[in-house]
Image (cartoon, rainbow, N blue to C red; front, side, top):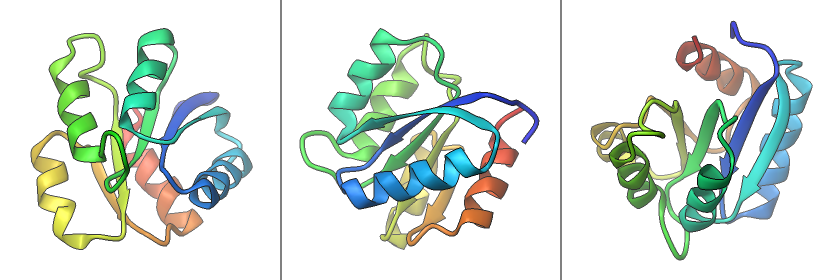
Length: 125
């Protein structure tokens, strides 16, 4: 991971997963702030209100707006298109779909700290 002081948007409808992600990210020493969103719609709202987000960690299966739908919206927006997105899910079958719609990486849940940090280091330049 080359960039310090990352601002990460974590999108998951499970509060326990969000807290776990936040804890892992803050311990890495590379992350300045973790912003939490419960679904894709909330996350899009955050993205429209802030321009300092460096990375999105995105769950696939969520109410209101799921991860694949959010991926499509982000990749269609010229201002957001370049944002790295790592998809986190329990559903292996979603991997090719997520990558097809522009995800930069994919991790299976449960997320292990070392895997998360390693994956982030591959997408942040």
